[in-house]
Amino acid sequence: MLVRTSTRLADRMHRGDVFEPRCPSREILKHVTSTWGTLALIALQPGTLRFSDLRRKVAGVSERMLSQTLKQLEGDGLVSRRSLPVVPPHVEYSLTEQGRQVAVLVQALADWIEDSLPMLISDDVRKTAQLAEPEV
Image 1 (cartoon, rainbow, N blue to C red):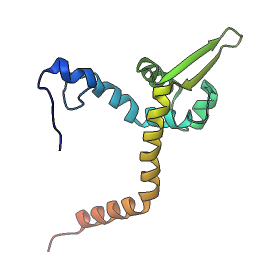
Image 2: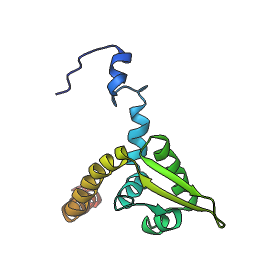
Image 3: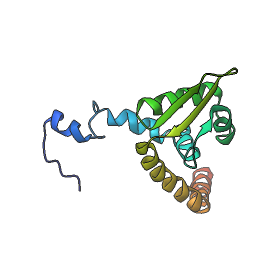
């Protein structure tokens, strides 16, 4: 049960309130739980990666989308970007302390999804089959 200790928005925003439409925590939640945000956080758990290595690890993401995702996560204080002054440009990404904390949480969610996939797929297949059956 959700118990609010204060009804004032300013008081609630000190901690964050994802149920409040104007709370910045919603935007961070969106970044962390997006497909590419989640995968980037998980991919960076073992340590620092160059952009190209990260892109290979997060298969299927475009260069533009990964760049945008990393900028968002960096802006949220979850990812650190280090640009080295070499030619060609060498950029490395790593998790901040807060990034490591949230990566553990989204890794647990991803693990649950992977472990539950047979059940989730069979439920989905069953529901799809029920929808396709003609009514008698």
